[in-house]
Length: 472
Image (cartoon, rainbow, N blue to C red; front, top):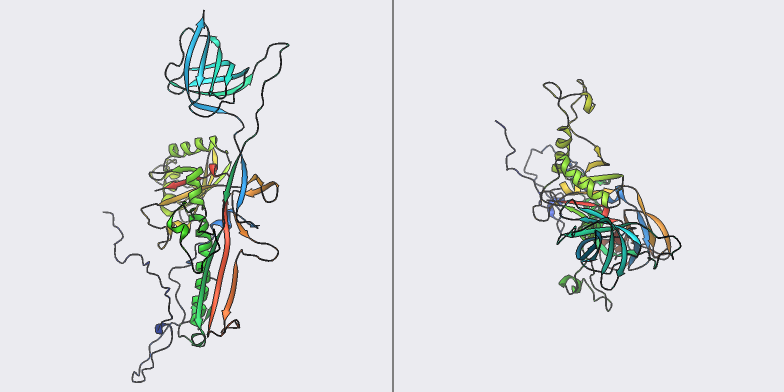
């Protein structure tokens, strides 16, 4: 009978950080009536391992400077035009020589006379090829002459899809009438200012503790404020990444937009928010919802969608633990497991080594590499969420070429990259400075040290149509 993990004790998510220095942080037990002293471990035990989650953007992107409140870029539109949801009407024929009119569901028609078009029924296997004989851009319709002999309306009331595959002209005739202009999609994002600080009084800086503290960046010592300051720094670095992943733009008229933070800002300045990666993918990318894709047929559906987008050959899957297990089980199920046990050769396992039950990637139309994303597993962050759960994200590898409005030329950029405010006089990528009159700071007469942190940045998601967000 299978067992299970007991519900208690569960995962501790109560924060250890507080807003005040506590007496328990320092030596306070001076009971000389106790003749027996405890045997103490001076150093902290790192029971949660490396608690920082920042690394995602460093792995997949880059950081580039910008000197504007607004970042804009142009992405290529489609090369070919395809209309869906066309309505067929006005069918006529003479001894099988047939013509017909097609009307767009919306928008103007950019087809041109003498182009050849493929017409496909969206509800059946019927398809026809025809020559365009007239186009009414304002009326959003065009007329065709069928290449085949038709005595009845081939499409009836069904909706039709059409795209141009060429053109045909008779000898000695004029050329194509009209031309098409290239059209770009313009996208933009705005940087936000992220701040934090740590402060400690001069007296507490001189107070020695009994616990030898250490942090993920290697800082050690018996001065408790060192631990708190370094943890503030690590927390701020995590915020820099999470804000770029989770950020959303403020809706016009929202209460967050007009909410003041500290002193009154300049006229017209509001909390505009910024569009992070998750929100961008939901806005103009691909979203898988309703459970993890855990069968090859599911990934076939994803591959077919990617075929219709940028068709990027290599992609990286950043997943939570359960999604990673689901993919491992899906790939393992493709093997016959040998005769009565797990086969070794196919999975590069041998009888003398620990059995490897995981996979680092697979190829199914495209190459997919998978890795666990700590942010989605962390119990104090997205780990275990039910409402708004994110199970993973597919990020295309490599770079894309875009027109940079600031540089005024085409530039290669990673699909994901951070733009931070900077100029010759001011670099706001990661600012830190001290104020007060303690700890070496000599800026005012307040008996404390305050460490300030600031960054101003935005995340640019290029080619979001190539990303896939996996929602719970």
